[in-house]
Image 1 (tube, rainbow, N blue to C red):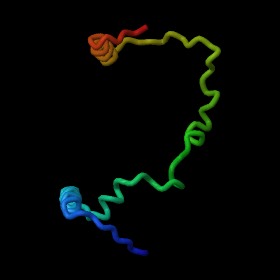
Image 2: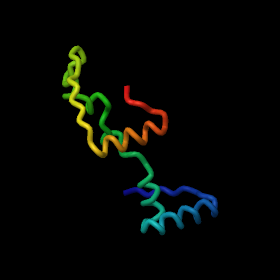
Image 3: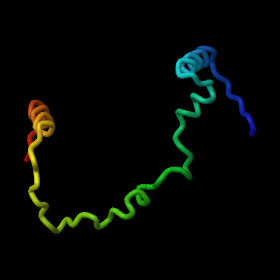
Length: 87
């Protein structure tokens, strides 16, 4: 594996080192953990949605199958205090 070097100001390196040490990492590992996954590992939106298209028929009115629960009522109450009401 090839190694590459970057130059950092002293204060930036000290801050990086301190953060990495608190998380039990080396500075290089900490930097690597902040990067997004490789592009070839990322799923596109189209591939994520494949198999879901057509699973809901928007032409049909949904059945009103709302069952009140303690949890649901607590959430509704909290949202109502914020001015958000159920239509």
